[in-house]
Image 1: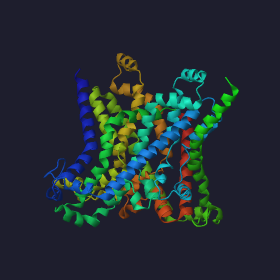
Image 2 (image 1 turned 90 degrees about the vertical axis):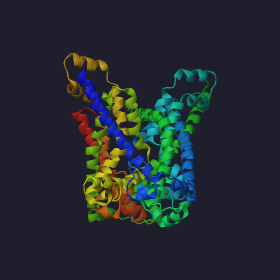
Image 3 (image 1 turned 45 degrees about the vertical axis):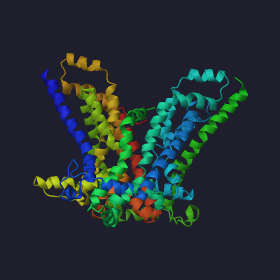
Image 4 (image 1 turned 90 degrees about the horizontal axis):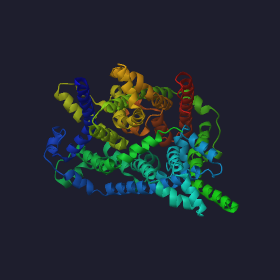
Length: 288
Length: 299
């Protein structure tokens, strides 16, 4: 029995190393944001903060534009996810019923969108002609549902017991009644899964906002982050920050802090929700 | 059951499906019709109806432009290397995870490796631009152990490698889920029987595990090849900078930069249409070949 133990030790080593590669970048960024400028500037900070300080975060949470962008992101995440769930579940419900007229054709229409490419410029012109530019609708409506979501939900709804429907029908329950009183309460698992998938998608909205939003007050967090960190927009007011904090804070420290600020919401919910995400990805792998 | 009620139910169901149906028609099919601007000299003030038609002039212009060939080459190169390294990575990781005996350890590793999938490209890009910059931690460590400093994100010969490796960093864990699902469907008796017959670990992997993964692998491979020219536009846009434009500009960033920002609507739509046509031909062609040779296909 020596060999299997050697194999397990080998696997454990490789996979531990891999996990560290996944975590190290975040830990380093966190450490830089919490270190004193002296150590950060001398490049002495690796994976543990040196000369602990919180000034960077004090500055970040005092920035109005940060909270405004966070608010926009929360808004599109909550409202966008509700729109998606309503639209998807209603459509999936109708398509899961055998009495629905034309359901095969509608299904074909939907499945075809899997392989049809979504052209960027015509998509932009459509949103423009709908007068959605520079509104938050442009971030929620064009991506509101997808063939993937509809098919997953429909498959799930179809597996909800048909006998229950028949019994409900006998008792005079309408289709709307079946949707609200039977299908929705019995499908919380799939609704949570799709909802969480979409919430992450909405929270990470970046490219759509880049295209559709010009008004700075409507920037979601990702766009603000990109402007401040990757495009070095921070450098314009570093002097002001250093004066305010009375500390030679470097642009790297500020950007590290902003990255962490934008990452924390996802990292907080992630461990609790991972279960649903994995389930959803598996549902998606079902080939019909 | 009452006929009037049945009729009413049908209308109710249609009403339920209506918003979704309108959504698919408006946001998935109308833009396809909008592709006609590739055959126009589209003017944003005149709109599609009153813009002049120019036939294939935009396509002729495209094939006569050096830019187009550069972008084409970059996209193929990026797509090819993404596939070469990005396709086997999650398979290998899934096989490693599958061999683990300790369930709690497996769960911890899974939790950690899935995590980057949920971070946005803006966050991942910002982190790696910071780490890989000339003054970043990677170069600090490299110079401590006597290696030369390299500005990875602004060097033409390292830029593609940065895109590929950050892509793998973000998605490798998530990519294992499909394969782990397929692996969990293998009957353990098969391995026991193979062991009784004297098959070693490699033999078992070759004769049992890989054949079971084959359908998933073929589907993933076909889809990835069909999308070989579709770079992740968010990722490339975030890493792209003027110093690497000659190797890093791909179709999607080109359409964004010159079409949306630069206002060349018709010309870049023609380019996007060309790219989409290549993708569709690839998917259907490879699917037919795969059906004949491996018996696996997408549909």
